[in-house]
Amino acid sequence: DHAHTSMVHELIHAVDMCRTKMDPLNNCIHMACTEIRAQNLSGECAPWKEFIGGQIKSFPNHGKTCVKRRALLSVKENPNCRDRANDYVEAAFERCYKDTFPFDRHPSVR
Image 1 (cartoon, rainbow, N blue to C red):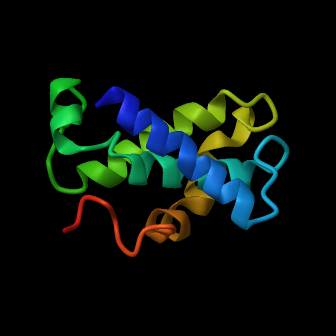
Image 2: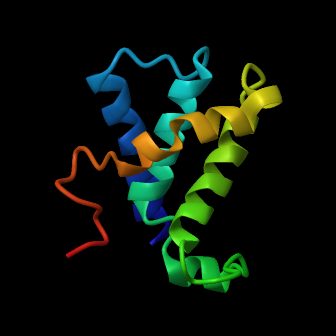
């Protein structure tokens, strides 16, 4: 399962790079967006994974909370974005969280 979610995560980054003129290393909003999308669409924030990892404080909105937390950790790894990482994630969050491309809908919705 870890291999599958990691592969989907990286493929979302590849899709983002191919469909836009994204520059995630130098444009921190771009980086935040692709991280939000990858965290959201890969299944890394599935409720059972968060529960096992001890990260669920409450079930309502756990998905958004997890995606935001994990995207923030990734954006902070970029030295160009570290100082204002929270601002970048917040600025990109709603639009990028709703973007399910290349899927018609979120993969967990059947």
